[in-house]
Every structure is written in structure tokens, then in C-alpha cells.
Image (cartoon, rainbow, N blue to C red; front, top):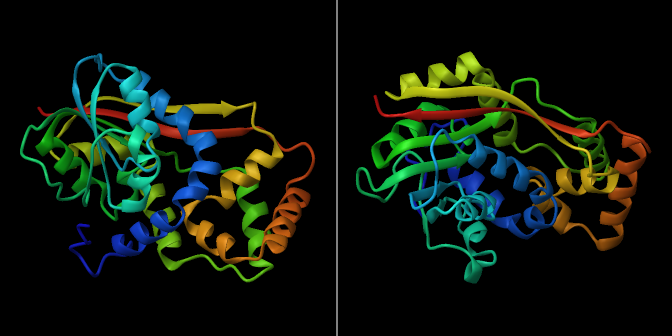
Length: 269
């Protein structure tokens, strides 16, 4: 595994990678219900066909971006700093490599496309990752969360977890701050331009998940990296009680999940 090069980073990537690795199975069981569609929408956003193109799925996680890109005809290699994410269902996934988004183990211009679904927003400075994507690829397709993205399930689950001793990891607070800093079309455009790339398309989208009910909402939030390891450490009975408490706080008729995101397509000038 390639470790973080900047030990002063407000978002220590080694801790982040460990949290995502520890929560790999929980991610597949919960958050994937949301991230699958978001990855598909990012692939659809591409200004060019992916068919026959070489593509790096950067920050692959459990592989939703890889699946969407393969369905569109791309030849895919996956990469992530969280090695256990890459190991999940490895036999049915494309070849993979572990690496830091700011210094990938690939030669210049190795890929036609670098797909980065909600991965560059894990960096203190996403322009570092965008710059590296421009070194190894010709077109960057990236996504991040809009600054106003939120849902009541977040507060419900965090409150229920806090009642049994969970605390926000320090990296999580810093991560949310870093994400919000480029959570507008204007700010995201500035990031890719600062990375030396040309913004081809940068758009805000609102994606509704009308089929996901309260139980799905709770599973989505409990399976995220900031909470998955803590949830796994609880006795099964306590896990169930936390889930019931989160559902109680959420209510019987919560608003549908609507993810507010920024989609980015950028290329070399």
C-alpha cells in the first residue's frame, strides 16, 4: 500500500484507508444501494463514449464505478488505497492496484479515461488528485458532493450511534469540511483549472432514490466508513437496538434520499 506522503495532512490517508478497509463488507451491504446509481450516472455523464477505452477506476471501493464502466464497454483497471475494498469479490472484478491518488503507480498517459467517483473529495486538496489524473489519463470524470447535500438519515443514525458510545473520527470532520469547499460548480471548476486541466463539463445534479425506504436509509448510513467498524464491534443485539433507535428517530415517512452532487469532466488543454 502506498502511504500518505504528507503526515501533516488534515485528512490522514492511512487512517482513511484503514477505515474503508475495515468497513468493506458493510459498505457492500449498505452504502452500495446508493453508490451504484451514482456511479452509473457519472459514466452516463461522460462527453465521450467509453466503449473500447482504457479506464482507471480511481478510488474503486467495492467496484460500482468499474461495473458501470465495463457495462459501457471500457477496459478497466481499478485502484484504491483501501486494499480490502479491492479484495471484496475480487474474482469477478477487473485487475487492481493499491495506490495514493496523488502519486499513482502508472506511467504518463496510461489511460484514456480516469473515472473518480467520489474519491478525489477524500483529499485535503482535490487539485492534487486531479493533476495526477491528468498525468496518467486524457479525460477525467469525477464526482463530489454538493455543499448542501444532506438527509435526515445522517442525523438519525449518528444520534443513535452516539447514544451507545460512537464518536466522530477526527478525519471525518476534516473530510466533510474539505468536501464542502469544492461543492459548487464554480468551486469544482476552479479545482480542475488549478490542476492544469480544462473543464469540459461541470454540472450539479439531484438524484433521487425513491425506492429506498427507512431501513435502507439506516443501512446506508451505518455502513459508511466513519461508523462501520464501530457498528461491527457491537454485540448483535446492540446493533439491532441501534438500528431500531435510528428508525425511531428517522420516523415512518422520511423524505426520499436525494443526493446533491457535482459531476465533472475535464481534459488536458
